[in-house]
Length: 506
Image (spheres, rainbow, N blue to C red):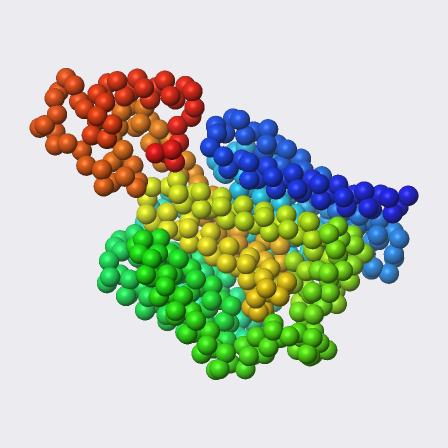
């Protein structure tokens, strides 16, 4: 009976998660928010059911195997705390604050998966992580309110750059080498990884610089500043973070200038840097060699990736079940390799769905970037979405041996205080930008309904109006459609009744 309960719960979790992921993509379609309310409610129900079923499996396994070292009251108390948090975060906060409900629901799902697997891997770490999430949520709310009102943020270009460089220099000077790199500053009662916040500052610096101008002078100055950031990170031997900064800059440069040659220059620079890093740093050579053939030294250098692959392969399509696998054999499993633990105990289907949900999360952020008008906000949303997407790719790619290991963790799911705080801050910024983008879209709809020219909208500035002295007062002609403005207003009003107009349609 117990096995039936555990197996049934596992299958139900996979089914609910699959439907949750499907809904997450579906709500990205252009449709009134009123029509999406039912989908958002379903997402929240599935979220709470998945969370409850997972903790049911944990409790059953504790009863079956007392050697796990956990007690039912302790786990149920922790579950109750998480449940209250998830209800407040997914239901109550969006009821009082204007947020993207789609982004918020996916965020809560990631946090729930993190709670479940951190509890399974290390209960004490999970409790500490939960309190960090609470603190991060407070920061999230502060940034939601602050960023949408603080227009001066777009003008702090060099402050972002100087503060980011200063934090990196502190790591270089004060940090100790851990796992071949300087990553964190030990403050006694906790360690702090400035690099997690430097990523946000770096994106804000590049967005602010290109908001002011995107000419060659700006490109040269920002490229030099970006190179200094990357060089300091390289001296810290944190090559994974250096790679993330490089990709962020090249892609933001392309979006700001719309010149494809910068992508080719960036690709060439990356190839040259990778070649140099391979010959300059011994731990890079080791990682590449392990990536090419982990079985050659499976008991030593290849042990981590070999155990990760064993875990993924052992889980199969449907997984071994929570507490039925052996993910603790993987070094630093709760941080860099948490995806392998998820794949082992929940299966390849669940793992693929998780990758798709991460992709959906990136698309949600890119949608915010598309819909907002101001170039600073547009580049900021794009840069933060890129940073998240690259980090997910490096983490999962390293765990499944698609790319060499980089030591990067999975946002919102992996353990790590600095990473969690920085991730909550960046999603708070994204939510603030969503509110701004919705205001911009609503303003454009009103302008369209009043017969405004397309040149009023972002991306259509090249469309020229006729000089006012050439237009008749009584019969104003639209320069795009050559339809009298009075008739076009009527046409737009009729179309608006048929479908809700979105700027993406133009």
